[in-house]
Length: 202
Image 1 (cartoon, rainbow, N blue to C red):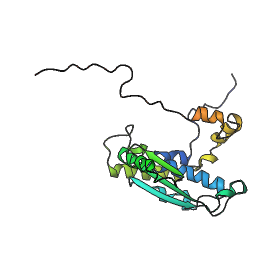
Image 2 (image 1 turned 180 degrees about the vertical axis):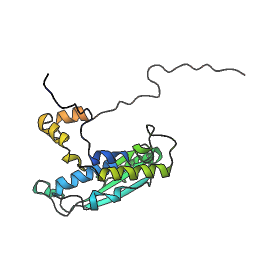
Image 3 (image 1 turned 90 degrees about the horizontal axis):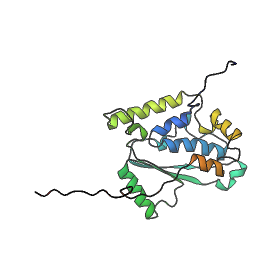
Image 4 (image 1 turned 45 degrees about the vertical axis):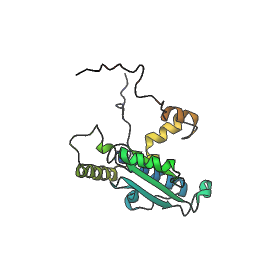
């Protein structure tokens, strides 16, 4: 067999993918890319630190004005992006109630993470955990992000390659939606028959 490079099963990651681990990270990654694609410029924060979306408060909001755009996004000129981030299931419930009452109609993007602090406070992480430990993990994630060669999702060469060679119709195509998104089916408390419970008489 001819010599070849080793496989890279996990691909090349970006700082944007890394910050997904902290509450506000999905928002930060999305804003780094969306703002640049719409305006032609990087997000207006030092070292790409989108600090308004960071933090450990249970529910946070931020605004980001779009003062200029590239030609294909000119309809967004003058819009102020309104975003909200929440973590923890109690806060998720509060946000969902706000949504049902119509209080979030002028928001463009809402991020909810079930775990406290985001994935870094989830069940797959070492225990015990505490607010201090979660904050330290978030700081480590942000420090690692700043040392990576690719900090924005759309700069990742593997992502570029897959869209050039496979998802050739672009990010919102039928194929990308079918393969990269999921859906959920509402299920009752029990799947199948509800088990019978014997009552023990005293």
